[in-house]
Image 1 (tube, rainbow, N blue to C red):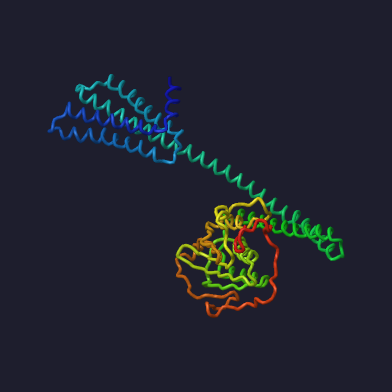
Image 2: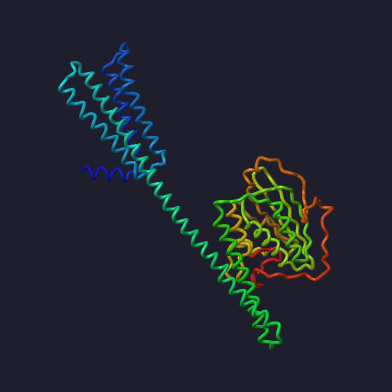
Length: 417
């Protein structure tokens, strides 16, 4: 019978309501006792029973509510509920023999004493069970946290191994293959041999780019629990300078000084990927890109707009998804990295006149309460404005760096894939 009762209690998701119901019965019994045995003139007896029975009854009702709102798992409700019922029965079992040995001359007092024993035993038993359930819950949580910490440590070891394997084994082999292919291309091969060597060289470059992307993603995933404060203003200036060194491109920038965010080296890859793809997928002789930084008290939004032909309607819904038709991670990597840093990336606008991407990141906690500095710096680190930007020589031939996408995967001259 005891086992059946415990099983029934364990299967009740709302077992705390048993305690609340018990308190309601006790309250109704107390009111009935008042109406039956007391007169309006019995103020001392009324106050005595209110303190000895009424207050424990209210405490019992609050206890049931507190149990349901606590962090104790529902499968452990049985402990305080069982202790509550057991305490009521236990103290009653002590009180009844006492009253039989030392009987009260007034049965009204005997009834009140019995009621007090049941209520006091119930509230006392509940307190013991609640403390015990909280202790068990804390132990379970601590054990789960320790197990999770061990799992995370093992996962970090695996990520570190994969990172090392990619950087020192796979990447080295890809570089050796690419180096030999480049040397063979310098010799006068037959047309078919030349095509094969060019394919090897191109695929090697793509493989190296993928390895580098995976390395960045692994690093970002391993370090997100220990972010550093990064000067986003300086990072953007360095990134724009690198892009302008490699490509023929006209970039307008509006970058406030001394804007900081939480992150690491992966932040640079986010903006490098967006800028490179905006340029490499642009058919204009000299692509034009505008990079603007806007801040609020909590976030930083970097907007990158290009003058490409836009993104087709049927490809916009999956723009941030991983593509299986090419090697590169592209915008998927950008989304993964931005998410790791607690931000978001969005395609704000796209059309025949170009596309606009917005990358929003939370500001570093140490800077969120500071006023935004309105001073702006250009790509070379000097003060700049729309009328005093650096002019690029766009008449020379464009230099095409390694493309992260295969031609068949390009959906826009200003998009990432």
